[in-house]
Length: 231
Image 1 (cartoon, rainbow, N blue to C red):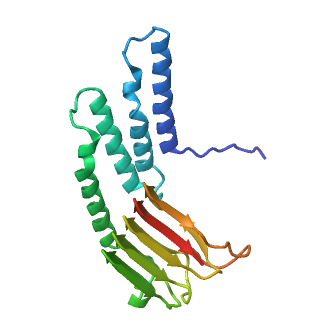
Image 2 (spheres, rainbow, N blue to C red; image 1 turned 45 degrees about the horizontal axis):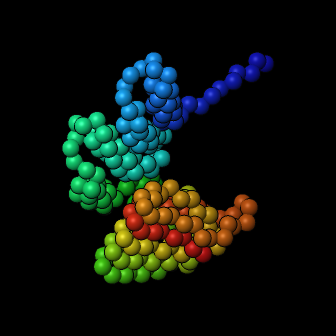
Image 3 (cartoon, rainbow, N blue to C red; image 1 turned 30 degrees about the vertical axis):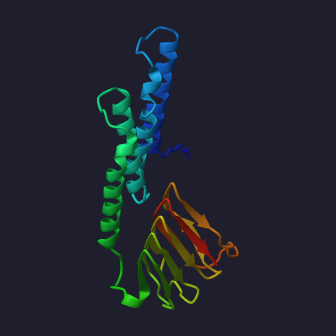
């Protein structure tokens, strides 16, 4: 039987690679005098544009939409400024950042669709802290996920008495100038799919034994804040 070789193509990586390679080629031709485009490094923000578009064109479910839009706007802003089309410095961009953060919160607050029967309220957590702290202890044996949002404050979500019954649970975490702490059982596996923006996601859990228990997927964004998962 003839074996057919198959390759998977990642459109986002192909696009980003094409833009970056083109920028390098243009710089090389300018150095050799073949092209006369002046200071080629004016176009360096194209790298940010490529990264942003790559995230937007990523595979479905890659959770890179918010970060992709953020990076794309910064790249376009810097590029237009370097080319003399836009005469406003990056320091004037902060209202756009505030708008994006607000949109991110609205998007997360619209809820998600879940397969299967309608879950009961106890199987999900909804935590919000602003200029203060909040703590949740979840003991549902059919935990599905939820969201935790901390703005200039802190959220603590304790799942050590909870259990995941069917499939992975998804917890969306958002931290802005604040922190989100998530405590999970030692038998759970943790997968981080969050977007750090001048912040960080940190998995401090001890990995469960091979072939261990259920999985918690942590998504969201950390803007000058932090999200920590512990067990």
